[in-house]
Length: 291
Image 1 (cartoon, helix red, strand yellow):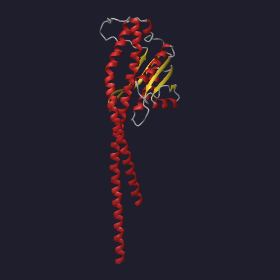
Image 2 (tube, rainbow, N blue to C red):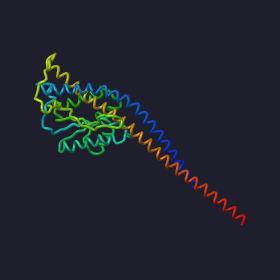
Image 3 (cartoon, rainbow, N blue to C red):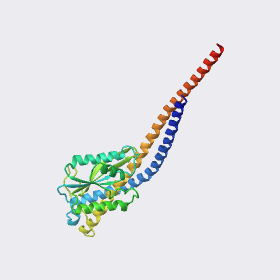
Image 4 (cartoon, helix red, strand yellow):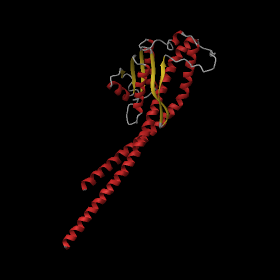
């Protein structure tokens, strides 16, 4: 009986220690989430407007140098930029990004030559372990997250597309909604998608005034907007990771509370049983002496 009590006490101490860790991790993730959320909320309107501008220009202009990035061609070689995190303990966050990447390969690019650039160690480790054609070139982008680091990846993708190493490039990431909600999406990166025509509206051409000339402006503008588009996706993923980890650690702390309650009930029952047994033995011994 004493051994059973000691085992339950040890389990209670272990759960309490784990709960302290999960609470600390929740607080750290909450602090990081606030910064990441501010960053993506400030970036999102700017990136969205730039993307609309780029799609509109591509749809309504004929620019030789610039439209090379918007030129559609038969898709045989595909680059997927899959954005996960460097660390686990974030619930199903990384698993969902990986699942979305695999689903895109199966549903859209089955039979094509697919290359994956994994941003984040978790994605790289999974794809490498399971035999996918994955590159570690940008897997450490979150070690020191900066616009320059993401820009290098965007420029590398643009150069590879221009050199016809790939016929299409897509980004798979988690779009941040709030701490408990993320939307796992894939969006075209190259060729640059044209602006969709609204249903029921006649085709119109945007009346842009270009200064300097159209070719110079578009050639300068396109790479910068693509850099911003990828950086926005990375910021979305970064905020989603911290939100998912904060939620997961909160749930883990709640589960630890429930487990502690059950363990304390078990401990009290075992302790009461031990006391009852001891009292029974004392009474029996006293009765034997009297007899």
